[in-house]
Length: 559
RNA sequence: GUCCCAGUAGCUCAGUGGAUUAGAGCGCUUCCCUGCGGAGGAAGAGGCCACAGGUUCGAGUCCUGUCUGGGAUACCA
Image (tube, rainbow, N blue to C red; front, top):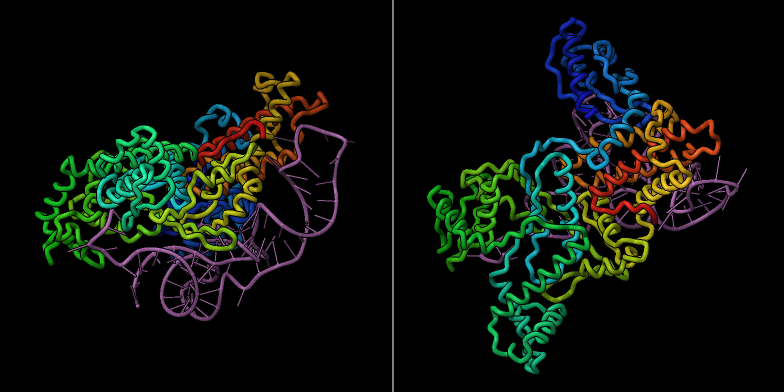
């Protein structure tokens, strides 16, 4: 990547300057290279000279000049300037930029990828909703975040497993079974109340209706467990269907029950006990989390003898490590933020390194309808499902999936977001995603029109890229060539929303190019320029498609 | 009480310690179709970057405190 190359070159330059005696000896600070806010100042800038002023006891401007003097030549470096109070500004070489079109064309499916992962195994765990009801808008953010983070990791050289962790046993599931039983018996004319803390949502009526159609009166004799299994099956089928609509496919569905049946939970309990990190108090077993840097100890085995949720979670994460994942990303909602330090502490207590485990906490979505906040509860059956919202924002020309992903990828997970349902429906057609998709469709249209005029890809394949010198062409090229860095940064920071910002900027630069540079020339004398610009269009199309695909959105050829 | 996240344009939100000028979308005002898709483009109005200190040559960005909002503080998962 250009940025990394620059850092290396600048470092070399500074060291050479020191060796030559042009700079005094001192320890170089970490070199930061980034795009300046003002594009007139070049493509990359570093403040190294200012940072070095104190240790070098030298004026920043002079330091900068010495570094520049020793900066090795590189094909991508066009111009190097020193600016007050000591910035080193680097502008990419225009000829080199134009040649990048060929690089992009040669790698239509992989342009932008890099290899920080080097084939190591990564796992992203997300959604992980227990099958007690349909996926709601509350789950949507984690779903889109997790899926896009997984895509980013794949694009940066990780071998990625998308994993959904769930629990289909325990008290909640028993209540779910009982609630379904009540709904089934209703159909047989036997009316009973939904149990205390049971599930009141209408979706169980639909499951009941299907069961009745299949089993009829025989339902009266079935045990609760039968209903539990049927409810889980039906709800999971629904969840998978919803995920499919969002374009999400998991590689592994991991059942918490397996942790018990395989003895992993027990093994972890035993190991904690013998490690001295567990102790007995008030009839329960506690994790000595205070010895692991946390504020308070936590119960891991209740006085009833049952483990708390922490125990299987600890065993699960241990198993993740044992399965050979080098990098594990957990996506949680803000309501879980207090639990994962305990779990990681437990994993560390068992002697495992948790450095490879990263946790992304996303804030909550506040739903607003008719100006009122909508409070959701799966148990009470009060929620807005992803399916319902998708249906509302989907029209003939508009994919609800793209709108939803765009909305959820336009914000940092650290920000809580307000989602106005009425506005979402009304404004779905104004969503910025269409701006990007429109750009893609527009490029396709140009390429199509060129082909119709007998000017297909084979006719412009040898277009002379050195003809691409217009400022709008170069501005577009700059944005295109930064895709690898954008992907690398978004992956490294686990911040997929950066892709969304980039996509809009890229589209803006294409639209500007379209405005300023006529691609299809009516004048035969401009035929060579047309060929070069068609190659640029194709490369731009590839770049736009790459970023849309990474975000899980479609790149339509027509709209 | 303690802990986590946030507070930036009318609304929803970006913003990587740097450059006399803080951005986008929506909404609002005014323009631009004799040429490749106007789902586009150009211009404009609209900002004590919550507040107060601090660090720094330099702070929307880092630190401390205050205020406001959301979340968490279980032998629920």
